[in-house]
Length: 364
Ligand code: ACO
Image (cartoon, rainbow, N blue to C red; front, side):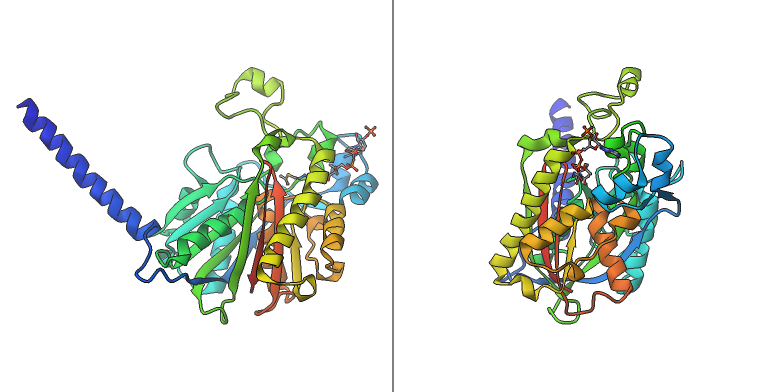
């Protein structure tokens, strides 16, 4: 009797693991015969920022700061912030719908959804699964990548790997963040810097011409520098409690000066690495999209890379630092306003909490 029960349980488990294994092979793994690496291109882009505009003058009323200080030290003039009740998936879903529309791809065609974010709607499940549900992307595998500001670059790298062997044909990669409700509006060194937003791209297999090609990716991290930017409370180390809230541990903490130095170093190194790898010189770059954290960082990095500021896509003055959303939002705006054309060579690079950094070289 006991043995029969064990056998039954074993056969159910075996059957389930075969099903899971089959699903995993089909959706996420396995090399096709011939191990041919596919070219992956960006077919559509989309973005969404909240309607509420928060100008620098707002902060003059609540902390000891000035519009002049914020503009000269950061380049930021305004940022967008969500209304109470809104969440990441609201912006990420809208951005994704716009990208799907541009790409003429339906949600049912997506095999993979990767969301670069550290501010999902809730701790669990992932924002990826919520966006999958809201889009009706029944066939996709969905998950998040928590890599701070380079979350979108990390997401592209992950999706590209899944797609290169041909097991995924169409992917949605989003970078999105709601930083505004993680800000301490009593701390002038952080609250003036950030904003909310989401940007999306649809990746497809490409012949390298029609939909361009992601030519090279670099993603890196150095956990020894985790302490430079973090949100200490609300996770498993310091779970939510009255004391956590009283000490303000739910808010972003940042050592701005040290981050500035690391930002310049990592943005330059990562960009140079992929350009060298591809034998591309800075003169060949049509558009440089750096992480939109601070105009001074962008100026120093562009100068060190030998890229003139006319080729740098900038929106930090409108949106502040939107973390993982910054590159895909800037890319989508530049595509839609006619700056970026098909065939242009785009260099994007980012850095952020982790410390993480990375770069992408994309023939659009
Ligand atoms: N208004 C007025 N004064 C301010 C403000 C403010 N909002 N913030 C700081 N100050 C003061 C400081 O208290 C300091 O005063 P003190 O000299 O009396 O001590 C003075 O300004 C200078 O402070 P610094 O920190 O040296 O100013 P700095 O020129 O470095 O600019 C900034 C600060 C903007 C944060 C800069 O260091 C920076 O951009 N760092 C990089 C931050 C970044 O990129 N973070 C994003 C990465 S992570 C992510 O994207 C999620």
